Structures are given as C-alpha cells and as structure tokens.
Amino acid sequence: MPLDRRSGCPINLSLEVFGDRWSLIILRDMIFGGRRHFRELLNGSIEGIASNILADRLKRLMELGMLTKADDPSHKQKAIYSLTEMAITLVPILAHLGAWGRIWLPTSEELSIRAELLEKGGPPMWEKFMDELRHEHLGTPLDTAPGPSVRATLQAAYQAVVAAKALNASPAA
Amino acid sequence: MPLDRRSGCPINLSLEVFGDRWSLIILRDMIFGGRRHFRELLNGSIEGIASNILADRLKRLMELGMLTKADDPSHKQKAIYSLTEMAITLVPILAHLGAWGRIWLPTSEELSIRAELLEKGGPPMWEKFMDELRHEHLGTPLDTAPGPSVRATLQAAYQAVVAAKALNASPAA
DNA sequence: GCAACCGATTGCAAAATGCAAGCAGAAGAG
DNA sequence: CTCTTCTGCTTGCATTTTGCAATCGGTTGC
Image (tube, rainbow over all chains, first blue to last red; front, side):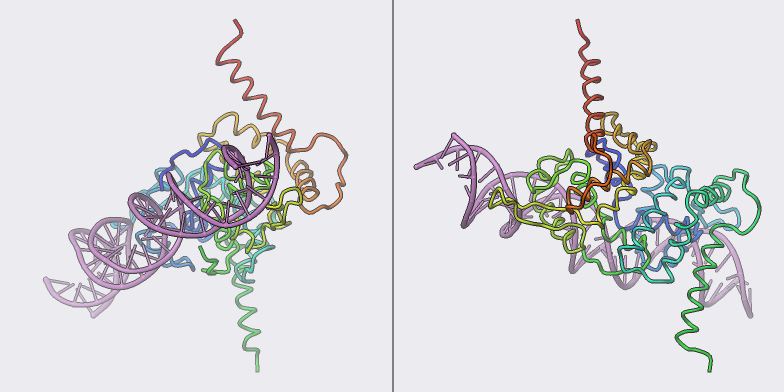
C-alpha cells in the first residue's frame, strides 16, 4: 500500500492515507476507545483485525506521521502508541463520518449513540475532545474546565444504551 | 468487497461503503467534475482508474443506493449516472477531507485551490452546492438565487491557478 | 462502408488480505 | 526457581482484490 502519489488532489491523497479497511478503524479505537497498546487494539476492536495487518498498519501510520511509538516505562515489553496532531485533527471528519453513517447505514443503536452525541455536541465538543486528546497524547496542558471528559461522556451514553437494552430483553419479573 | 457487516459501528459501516481506493474518487469526479458517463469517469480522472474496476464500483455504488443509472435519451448506448441524496450528503465530508488533506499532505497547488475555496465557503456554500446537485441529479427545483454555480466557481479558481502557473513558468518576454 | 466511440467483459499477473501458528523475551503467581 | 501468561510482532500459506491490456457486440457520425 504505497503512497504512490497518483495525484496531488487533497481527496485522493487523503484516501491514500486511510482509504483502506483498517487504518481508520485503528485510529477510531485509539481516539474513542483510548487504546494505546498493540494487544488492546488487537483484541479490543469489535471488527477483529488480524495481528499482521495491525502491525503493518501501525508501521504505516507511523511512517505517515499519524502515530508515534514509545516504550512503556512500566513494562519493558510494552510499546505505547500516541496520536500526533495530524491524527487528532481527524476528529471532525470522524464526527461527520459517524453522523453520515448513522443516517444512511444500518448502524446498531448502542454503537451509534456516540456518533449522535458527538454530532449534537458540534464543533465545541470536538474542540474539547481534541484538547483532551492533545493532553493525553502530546502532554500539552488542558485549557478546558475540569469535569467529565468527552470520552467518558460518550462511553457512559454507550453503557446506558446497553443497559437499557439488556433490561428490555429481560424485563424485571 | 462485500458489505459483510463487521460491526454496526457508523464509522465501520461508512468504511465498508467507501473505504477503498476508488469509490470516493468516482464520487468526487461526479460531484466536483460533473461527470455522468462511463467514459467521462474513465478518461477524466487524473488518477487513471481501470475500466473493470470502474464498472465494478459503479455497480457496487448502485447496489448501495449511492447512484442510479438511466438511459441517455440522446444516445442509445450511453448510460447516465446520477447521484442519490445519500451521495449528495457526502459534500460536507468531502469538504472536510479536502481541508484536512490540504493541511497535512503534499497537495498540488492547482488541485487544492478548490478545497481551500470550499473550506472558506463553509456550510452555506456546501448547502448551495448540494442544492445545485439535487437540481442536476434529482430534478428538484433550485431554491437559491441564480448566479454562477458553486462548481463553476471552483472550476474558475482552478483554471486561474493553472493559468498563473503557466505564466510564471514562461513569463512574458 | 467504415472508423470512432459506447459501456462494459475477459484473462492473467501481481499485490493485498485473512487466518492460524509460532517466536523470543519479560512479568506475575506460587 | 518454575511455570504460566502476556508482550509486540513475524511467518507461511490460501484466498481475494487489484491493475493492466486486449477485446466485445453494438451504435453513431461521416
């Protein structure tokens, strides 16, 4: 999957970066799922990526400048992956993509609630989320008011839907 | 390339629709380039898609509900492809994608001027463009004021940059 | 009549993907 | 210390997708 520069068109070049089935899934799991380690990404995503593909994509995303890799000080064998600013600025695109998919595709309710919330939150919420990601991955100071993180908010909404569905499936006697 | 529903996540489903190298390029050429025929798409795109891939993708995009196909009354062999509302609502995503690519990737100046203009125009310009596309592809009445179309505006900017570059390359004696 | 053009299709080589197994080394439990 | 588990990642191999070039039956313009 070489970046063979088929043309200098911004859309084409963007597609050469994540116009495949897995790159954006990996970034999604890092951004929204907070995953930082190889195994987390391997076992964590619902879609079930193969380990060789994951290794290849991580390498590729690093070469493209979307990720960096560092040793985890707490474990000599662990590598920790970080998003770069380039990857963090994908948040608005992911938000739009999620919103579009939610409208037009057969999404599952519990998995689309996050997209809905992110859409409703709009650019201010995206900015807050990006600020949090910068803090988490780049070490920059948080300039937003303390409180529940955007990721925690989204995650809580997801859990609430899952719980509600479980309740509906087996209602209290 | 089956839509095998790896998961009901909106982002994942979106990727199963256009998470490949060509689908979005075809849509880009239809949306921004105004191309409606097989040959126009085949020869028109700078990236040079193969005819079998183009045929396959057009079929797939039709099955997904992004395109429709009709006979061209002026030519018994010509088929005319139209965007559906589902495809037209990709405009904001394409605008964001173009803006992102323009910042982070080595785009060429003449090809990125359109992305820049579209970004500067913001949501109002996107809405106007979508309205024009609906008129063109779905036959709905235009509800915007008459005047130069968004596509014509973008195209003119592109031509201006090309002309300026040519002038720079061989300045007047 | 005849070349150019229409939307594709075919055959084939090359590349990407998916799957399962395995690797060396480090950490944790007992 | 030993045994098991976990770490990121690699290997081999079958299947699928892609890219390229040639071609097809039919239509159109001249």
